[in-house]
Image (cartoon, rainbow, N blue to C red; front, side, top):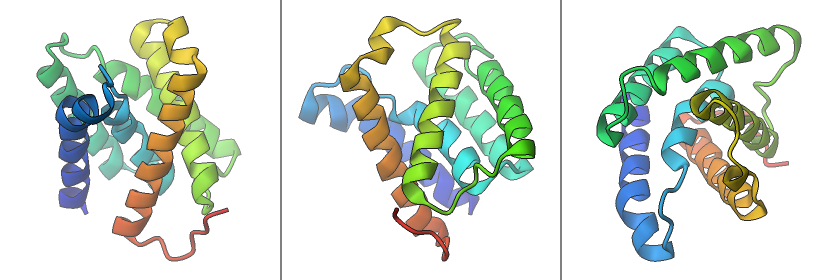
Length: 154
């Protein structure tokens, strides 16, 4: 299971750095950051997924030339928020669209902690729709790879 998640993360890094800028002119896609949050939301907050997402955060920091902990600490804060929200609400939903929407909400929470606030550029309709479409694709891929049998598309 971990190997599949590593392949998804490496594919997202390649897509962010090579494919999406070349095909669509995206300077910086946010797919790599979505891969850090979406598995935790879609499959549930377990030690395994927290560990993988934390490792992905550190690898993203290393590959992007960021300071150590610049993304890992905001991810851990976001994971704590997810933990407390999961205590009261069932956010690990079987509906893929709902799972993608919740992933986008927690993604923006991660960006809030990462940037110490939200830049207005992240709140434009184009960026929000791009993040939502990337989250939908990522949730469909996670669902197909991890074969969540009871999931529905609506």
